[in-house]
Length: 366
Image (cartoon, rainbow, N blue to C red):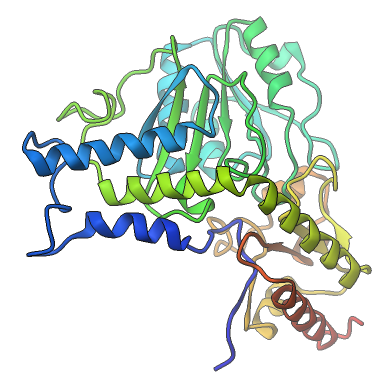
């Protein structure tokens, strides 16, 4: 069976060997030590597990602004829901958010009757309009869009929010460990599995002085903010992945840029969705007239890529992000998203792009 070529890094990333190794101690079985201990227990094994969680917390925090606290969650979706609903309670003056936010934010924004802020045809937010920024409320602005990779002016929106005594929530899932995170945010949501860590864990960073109600009650874990037994294994994997991302930050960025240049060279007839700058260059969302993206995925079955967000890819709906950019429904259905990163080789990307080009020819597109 042919080897799968993985070009879907926005959906999830391969687990780093270093992250896997960090997790193994805390997945101990009978007779393999005390790595299974509950970090809330006060005996030796529990204290060791609790210490591992705190080491991981520091590793994760090292890639975030100073002056805040990291609370582990089950993932970024939970973190975003926590920030939006509890933030709206703390700051009841109203909510606003970008039209291209991930569904984890967008559906919350809809529930909160938020003002939806527009983006331009390149997928970058328009300059903040004071009339749309709530007073004593909450503004949600993602850092890197998950579908087209455009980098948003988070600092500008934070300044606009603060001028009206509002908080700024940043969905930094696609940017954490890859691009610099602005210092101005008040709340930041991140996820481990987007930076070569394990699935099932994320975090919410809360700036000192910002008061949110606890997410869950019952055991006082996570500094009294999120009750429930914490997984040392998941935390250790997240921490190791974050430490590796910090160490490899420049090397990873340079590698991603080389792969971007190769993709541009090999797919010159395809049209880029979203701005080339400012953009995270591991996201290559493109379209080609005459192509059916869904059929392309079927014909290039040994290449893993997507039509947009993994969370919405099975719905059959056209991407809300592409429509927000003004892309027609036909062009949106002719679009594909390719994502690469640290473990993608140039040879692998070349083979994947050739397979996609061959699949396009089956549709009569040369």
